[in-house]
Amino acid sequence: MCSAGTEKNEERYVHATNPHLEYMKEDFLYHFNLGTATHDLPAMFGDVKFVCVGGSPWRMKEFIKYIAGELGLVSPDGEYPNLCEETDRYAMYKIGPVLSVSHGIGVPSMSVMMHELIKLLQYAQCSDIIVVRLGTSGGIGLKPGTVVVTKQAVDTMFRPQFEQRILGKPVVRGTELDADLADELLECGKEHSEFETIIGNTMCTMDFYEGQARLDGAFCSYTEEDKQKYLDSAYTTGVRNIEMESTVFAAMCKLSNIRAAVLCVTVLDRLKGDQVTIPRDVFKRFEQRPQNLMGLHLQTSPSSDIGVFLSL
Image (spheres, rainbow, N blue to C red):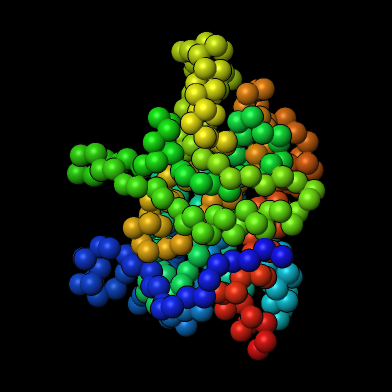
């Protein structure tokens, strides 16, 4: 059975580092349609210990239903309402200490969601939080269906950093993820013999087509040989999959004192092609695999408060 680390010595609170928040009379989290003046955030979210985020609203609703069943925390009325139902930007679901939130596609969408999620968790006075991104990705040299636990989130130059422009100037932030949490999830992966789980670097791009060296976009200024050389170089540096959110996710979690991990299943081997052509039913089975690993981790984590909720 996989093990999830050592017992905590002291509470680790979420920390939004913006000093201006202290002087705001109220804060309306616009894209969640939740606010400090309109909602009792500590009452609604103060018991949250695990947050799982993923691109698709549908996938995150399916995840909360799956986790509810796995943990025996089924909603009394059988319904799992979207806590952000009055906005169409993101979806949010909760059962017990588990929060499930969609983040859309790409760095900008992830960034907006993470700003508001981090503030939400701070306003709710949450501590000892684990946040995990569950997603799909393109693999490099891997059999489709392989789950990659991210060791380092890197940019398109294979650097473990996230760079953005603030006030017109470049700001670079580190993208270190929690190594112990990654090891714990990798151990959980060994329990699922029907698919392989590996650890490797994840490359985050700003685009699905040219940014990922695809040949099938509307524009392409490089050759197939150029593409292969680039992907081979990525593999040599330790990159095993490609997606579009991991660097900003890792950077923001690090800044906020949050333990974080990224779990992505590969849906194709980019060394063999560019288009995702697997049947829809196979795709759905693949995208459940990160959920399965997270479910196992939740059930076996000695440092979590899941056992408290199961005994109530």
